[in-house]
Image (tube, rainbow over all chains, first blue to last red):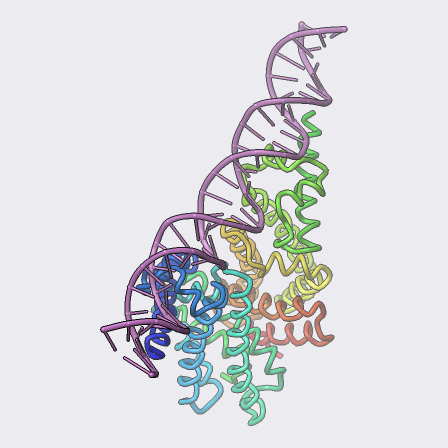
Amino acid sequence: MRARLTASRERIIAAALGIMAEHGYAGCSVAAVAERAGLATGSVYRHFPTKADLFAEVFRTASQREVDAVARAAALEATAAEQMSAVVQTFAGRALQSPRLAYALLAEPVDPAVDAQRLVFRRAYAELIAGHVAAGVANGELPPQNPDLTATALVGALAEAMVGPLAAGVAGPDTIPALIAFIHRALGVSP
Amino acid sequence: MRARLTASRERIIAAALGIMAEHGYAGCSVAAVAERAGLATGSVYRHFPTKADLFAEVFRTASQREVDAVARAAALEATAAEQMSAVVQTFAGRALQSPRLAYALLAEPVDPAVDAQRLVFRRAYAELIAGHVAAGVANGELPPQNPDLTATALVGALAEAMVGPLAAGVAGPDTIPALIAFIHRALGVSP
DNA sequence: CCAAGGATTGAATGCTGGTTCAATCCTTGC
DNA sequence: GCAAGGATTGAACCAGCATTCAATCCTTGG
């Protein structure tokens, strides 16, 4: 029974994620999520007090997965320059793999309560990047700078640069290398 | 009569802008806009077919004003580095002057049809910046790069870096200089 | 096998806020 | 001064969708 409960909860989240990946947040009525999860509309409310709470958790889960993937990729590299290359490759590569989902997570209009979750998500990226930048500055690989501001600006640059390609569904083959070059310059990586 | 008509239209737009500057897009019900403009709710629909159309125009007007101000400031400068300093100073300065409005124009959740207008707005900034970057590359001040990608990424960086300060209502005194330094590095301005 | 307590159902409810429209009021050209 | 045509009004309407809840169905401990 306990197991069935948790399973339902998982199924709801998975269903919501699936619909987001196919039709965006716009397609995520509570009824649609319930149907895909295989239960009645009202049952969703046994697991989540409101729709916003449900999607806050959906965003949290999906975002954490992304941040983790990026963090893991960056951790394999030694220099700040390589770490940031890995961040861009992973972030952009995964986004282009599931463009609809990436758009929903990054930029699609959503309930303000869910939007707040998005700030947390971006903040997590910024902190991850800030850590690598701070280390690079500390060991002299990068010039002195405010790691937090640099990281915040880079997150914005990354997100903005992806919105066009995500809307179009594909990126030109040189988008990612060009973005890496931009970011290396912005960090002050010596050429 | 014709004059009265145009005047009403202007008053509606001004009222919408005023409410946005005070309470954000969230506070902009059609009824509230009509009341502040001094006419009945229904009369708004003599001037705009839908609320989304009204706000698309409001966004267009306000955004154009911002882009023009930035363009004017940049045009006074000679080098790409100085032009970009002027862009940041003007953009950030104006945003911090009317933080609520800036937040609404940049980031607040809005109707998708209005959101589309936002893309146009960001595109306008990107094109403005891309022009200066391309000129800088052409005359050797800046290293070779894709001016459009650089410009898009810079717009994202600028916007993201402003969201925190806008939410807080103020920016630390070194935010703008630090942002200028970041952007100079990103462009490859030689130190 | 049975009753109690909780889970599930899905149609009905309710709210919010954009949109409409019949009645009324002005303006204008004659 | 007056009729016609358009502007204005604002209360009523409506759609969409989150949320609720009384009825029903399972699970489970005895």
